[in-house]
Amino acid sequence: MLLEINRIVVPPGQTVMFDGVSWQEFEAILEDLGESRNSRIAYDQGKLEITTPLPENIVNKVYLSNFVEILLEELNIKFCSLGSTTFTNKLILRGIEPDSCFYIQNKAVVRGKNQLDLTVDPPPDLAFEINITNGTHLEIYQSLEIPELWRYERGKLQILLLVDGNYIESESSANFPNFPLLEVIPQYLTQCRTEGRNEGITAFRSWVRQQL
Image (cartoon, rainbow, N blue to C red; front, side):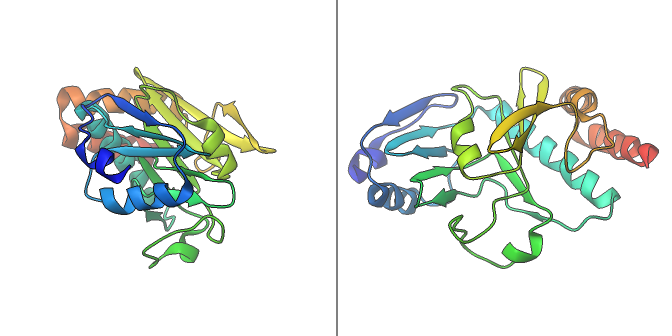
């Protein structure tokens, strides 16, 4: 399996899938692939997916991460950003790599840790995925008990909150309940792409301050 994985080149926007992958093989594949890669991994009870995002996905991920950081900074909320960390739980044989994630309430618990294991560590308070080509693995996120998930695709932001073990679509974020993010974030993402990052980021920060 490792030889096969090493020889595979996944073009941007494409996904390769494997079935019958044991947990031990999954862990070995993660170690072999390493952290310096653009691909994203999803593992669901023997099924493994490896996806390479499009360049525009990566750009949107950076902008959206910037927006979340601005919200937290302006609200004077301490946080820990872990980017595309791999989250796994051996007990339920599942793992996922969001495009980005943030620890907010549980920041102190994970700060300084080089590896996270969701059998003992808390999940991130907020995770998001950008331009989903093959669908978001909601079952994996739900089973890992990530309380808030954002999905951005085709100019639309969707906010999902975990309620009684299932995601429900929400009009507002649990972490930023007083901000109309569904309307505003797509607007400023567009501004970043069309006018430039600095212009869009500066405008978004100004908007956040006006709401306070």
